[in-house]
Amino acid sequence: MKNVRLVRKDESAVSPVIATILMVAITVVLAAVLYVMVSVILRPPPDIVTMTVSVEARGTNWSVEVIQAAPGQVPSATYLLVRNPGGGIALARTPWTNLAPGNWATYKAAYQDANPADPNIVAGDSLLLDRERYPVGSSIEILSDSGILAKRNL
Image (cartoon, rainbow, N blue to C red; front, side, top):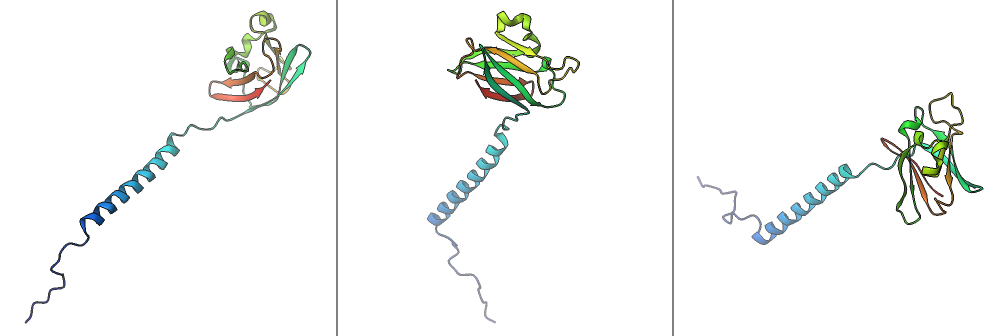
């Protein structure tokens, strides 16, 4: 009986150059897939706006009226931050409870509760801001401990 060989005597399957190119290509593809997976995980969540406000000029003040607010939002856990037109901070993060009319001289901003019997921020509540201290081009951010509730330009 004759011994039949099914395998060629030449045992190399692919040339070393082709093998190197394939290894580099596989590594690049795996790195790209890993980059996409990690970048999706590390991307910060978008700002979730949970309060709707309207801004209008009234005399020497800006009136920022709450149109809609998330249930359970209270003035002590809600903050106002005002940036000047250049992006610098004109009013540091301040709780709405500090924006009492008696503190107008300090902050040039006041919180007006439309329904004092309700401890929550509700539609109709508003903020007054001095137009001289916070000119056109300034922006307001209404914040909570969990993030930005609303953001508007004056």
